[in-house]
Image (cartoon, rainbow, N blue to C red; front, side):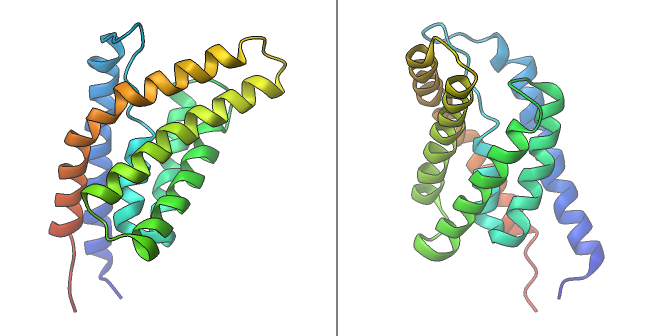
Length: 169
């Protein structure tokens, strides 16, 4: 069992780093256009964090982050809370049971997170009677491709937090 002060400190550092990435998205990346698309790094954050923190803590972080995104961004209420929680559960299982958490695992879960979020957007669009499902799918794929380089920034930060805030008893 970890001391409460350790737990509070660790998650405060994760929250601060995540807030910095949110600021990067809002202040910089939202104004960048590549192929007419904007990089979208939010889905990468819960995937990488959950890869390190496992299936109990990762999805809780993802749920809180998703609720925050639902307040900031729209497709519909609860979309990011649901999709980020699912992404975190899958990422945590991969990081805990299938691959060693690291660069390759982070790349795999990030691609899954970006494609999964895009796929859920396509599904929502399809279920709501959207006419432009193919266009939505192409946009989601393009967004995933241009967003993936953000992993080069996210991975070292979350890796450092995970390693520096680890306590061995």
